[in-house]
Amino acid sequence: MTKKLAKIRYFPNNFQIVEDGDYVVCAISDKKINLENLNYWNVELQEPYFSYKEACLQREKAIKK
Image 1 (tube, rainbow, N blue to C red):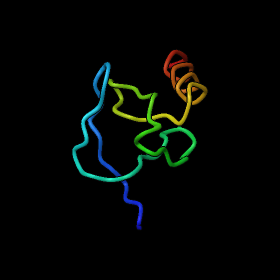
Image 2: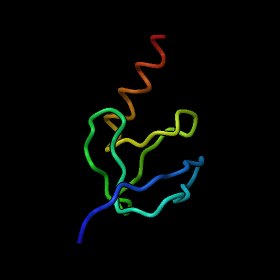
Image 3: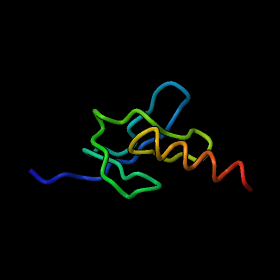
């Protein structure tokens, strides 16, 4: 079975699959995130994060701007 990159639209408490796939790629670490493990994302930037660590790094980066 070939894994396919999904296209997702992120909302405050959930996400919508726009194009079917098995995973998304973390915006910070480039790690693959299986959709069943996707827990962290930024609605404003419309990007997923592998874990809370990557989400915090992105938030810190945004605060410094």
